[in-house]
Amino acid sequence: MNNGLFANVEMQDMITATNETLFMTSISVAGTFILGLLLGLLLYLSGPGGLWQNKPLNWVTASLVNVFRAIPFIILILLLFPFTDFLMGTIRGPRAALPALIIGGAPFYARLVEIALKEVDKGVIEAAKSMGAKYSTIIFKVLLPESMPALISGITVTAIALIGYTAVAGVIGAGGLGDFAYFYGFQRSDFGVVLVCTFLIVVIVFIFQFIGDVISHKLDKR
Image (cartoon, rainbow, N blue to C red):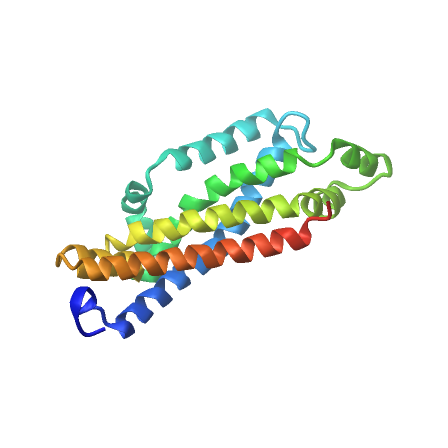
């Protein structure tokens, strides 16, 4: 792009920034899915009527989830700088954004997991209990399979939120399209760069939404 509004847009730089955003999003979605699923299961299983009903454990887990959900992401990144530096050896670049992305996304997804599990037919769970199924069997053979379409829909919503988080992380040097839009677009008053970065982020959102919808639809047996 050599003239007009997009005169300063270098495609190779855009490809690099896009790859960084895809890297941060993909890894953070995987990490969020695992951590959020564990937290969501713990919330559901330790809650009222749950298989492991335990009020103190449920309270601690719920409080932890609520606290991290309440912290604005930009502040969470700053709070996690010491932890990120210890874990990653740096506080800049795409890899350095991963701890904050996962810790920021997992509590949000955990609540969606809890909701999905609560929608599983209680009769199916009771039937499994009456046949002497172990708790592990109920979790892996009943709860998770029955709630999987909702779990996939939930992680799709979370993935889109994480794409937005990567843009925020870019403002403090995490790389990706957010970083490029801020430092090479906004700070240089180059609207063309900002516009292209925005377009690419929207495309990534649509791709993740499409993939999530297809998987969720295929898993839905209704």
